[in-house]
Image (tube, rainbow, N blue to C red; front, side):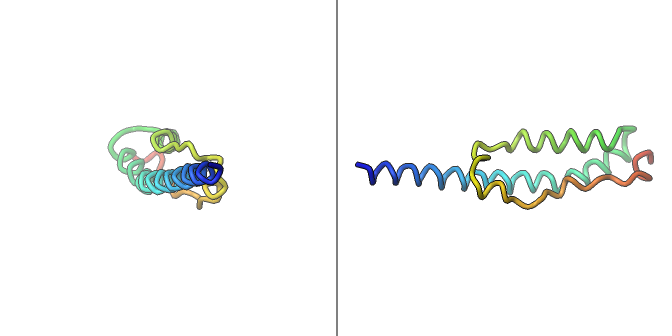
Length: 94
């Protein structure tokens, strides 16, 4: 009986970890294109690029939030591409 329970717990742990990895890969894909999107929208509209970038990163995080944040392996995920800041001189360009 105890062996079955241990197996179930291990299965839950592994599923959570895999789900967290999938969500991080998905978030990474979204974040790769955020800078490009901000640049393009900045050329088309008079927007605050830094604020837009911050909002898009927040949206990507919210849409790919995972329930396995307490797993040790998830905490060691590499930094995202979305943290690249839009250069100052380009911010005011139409």
